[in-house]
Length: 164
Length: 103
Image (cartoon, rainbow over all chains, first blue to last red; front, side, top):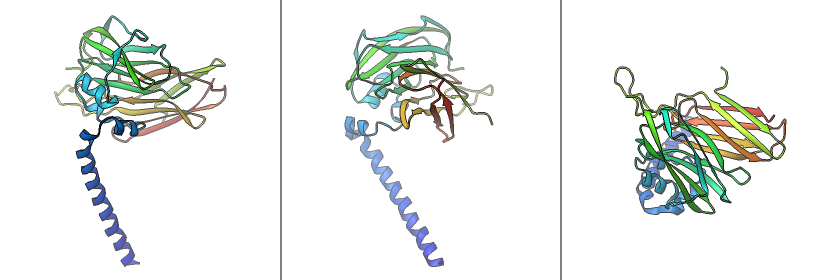
């Protein structure tokens, strides 16, 4: 019994070591494999995209492609936000086959704020409340039929939402 | 402890409108406290809504979502009296789940 237990722990240790090595290899590989890997990891939390400081990098990390402006993406947001800690924003679109809607604030320390997955049967309309460090462009990205469409609006912030 | 999640799901026959309000600090990791020390990041990373065993809405959040987050969406279908399951997980691995009846 004792032998089996110790063997079990040995085996377990090896598995853990193996996992660690695999994770390291995984980290090394990420920058080289691009959009396919992103699509495969679709239901996972997009950790990498939420680490990007810059808006373009965040969109690239999240979707692996760039967006084109579209008047079919509508954003409902205030012109001036008195309190940057709570800025109510909603987005909707008349585009068909929407699979996700994301919100980005270009002047925030981390640009990507929220990304919503829209399964078939869910309406492409989302309302939420976001933080804004200062006056900034806010971008809504709609992913529809595998393509990205965006709408942009500048929101003036009188008191920033990142404290000080 | 009371649930951190408050949900209202209302069916109008064709679609179900869902509003959720969650109690969570949503600390971004960029704010300093009164002593000038950085408040470590603590925010919900994923919030999901399930109806009839299928996800109807999944939110991936960063620290840029406001404290005590609010979200509103709608999905086609959903009958009065049916269950809508809501759950979240944050960056520290904490979770909460609740089930709301569609009204």
